[in-house]
Image (cartoon, rainbow, N blue to C red; front, side, top):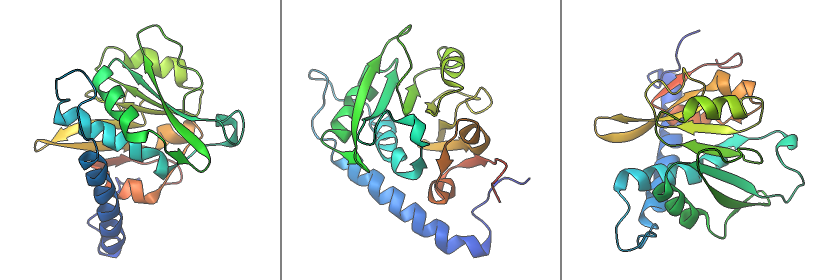
Amino acid sequence: MNRISSRSPACVPLLLRGLRALCVALAAAVCAAGAPALSEEAIPLEKRVKAAYLAKLPGYVTWPESAFAKPDAPLTFGVLGDEQVAAELAQAVAGRDLEGHPLTVRRLKDGDSLTNLQVLFVAGRGRLADAVRATEKQPVLLVSESEGGLERGSVVNFTLVSERIKFDIAVDSAEKRGLKLSSRLLGVAHYVRPGSGTP
């Protein structure tokens, strides 16, 4: 099965619309970040952009009903190993909900439980293997930022392309976790590794 490409003429209008929508949402989130959340030091732009992406990702993901204890249970982001991303993300989602699920952020340290999460961002490379093992049977959108992240089991992996933050997606990993990803999200990804249902 071929890699999804945005170069197909028939797909260009749809992908452009999806790209514009996601980019506008991302720009709005970044611009709304406001004052730094950690002491007097501004959070680096790279971390602010990643936090903005994380805040928007749930809008393009469908979780199974089993992912939530009840219809109004929180949709919880876990951030492992990066306090700056956690702080920026908490500010971005404060007071927001998605389809009745309040958005919350849990700051995690090495050794913390990785249960009752819907999104998990793993900072750095060294923690990813343990995070994959701990969540591989759970409906968790696992997001990483390490080289070879998709091959190691993450669903979304941030990557630097021409000095810009992009993201790659592994649809097959999402399917194994019971997650459905919007075609709009796939259309704006830098690279998509297909799954069984990907055209």
